[in-house]
Amino acid sequence: AQKVTQAQTEISVVEKEDVTLDCVYETRDTTYYLFWYKQPPSGELVFLIRRNSFDEQNEISGRYSWNFQKSTSSFNFTITASQVVDSAVYFCALSSSGNTPLVFGKGTRLSVIA
Amino acid sequence: SQTIHQWPATLVQPVGSPLSLECTVEGTSNPNLYWYRQAAGRGLQLLFYSVGIGQISSEVPQNLSASRPQDRQFILSSKKLLLSDSGFYLCAWSNPETGYGYTFGSGTRLTVV
Image (cartoon, rainbow over all chains, first blue to last red; front, top):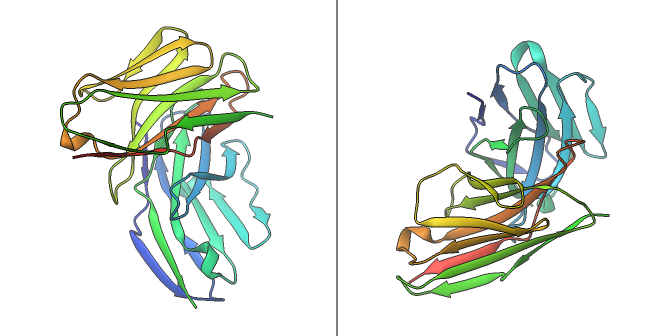
């Protein structure tokens, strides 16, 4: 069975600090896809990134970066120089083939304090 | 480009009343469609998913049901709402050929009173 674990329930940081959100996954599939979503207070789920299991290159998008390590089954998300607008719940998710429902972690609530 | 529409945005319904939430996708054909629920302060729970018209897979036994009458339309229903049905309902789609998508609608916040 597939499983996604986000051990950090809540994180609070001061603005401009860097913060890393952890995500550990379990799957027996050799092909799978990993996702990160942001859920601001408005509730909608905003897609951040999709990464397939064959691509272990780290990705950077502005202040956001993702570290995918198959050896430890982790797909961690780092926000550099955090801002108040980054305050949200962040979800990590897994799909076995890109054609099946997403399995979500329980989410990490990030609070960035000015 | 593909867009997903979900309505209504908010809904307050009495216990025992029926429910119908609708989700439609534009800009794609034969999508996989999904209904998720998020209870207050909780994670996302998959309720139903569909790989084609009339094909519905249920993940959680409950008093909810789903239907897909058209290729890009997905409906979540209940004949009699329970208090425990309160939550935030999200619809999503994915492209079964490319694996891309997994985009969510803006959600429906349901309060059963």
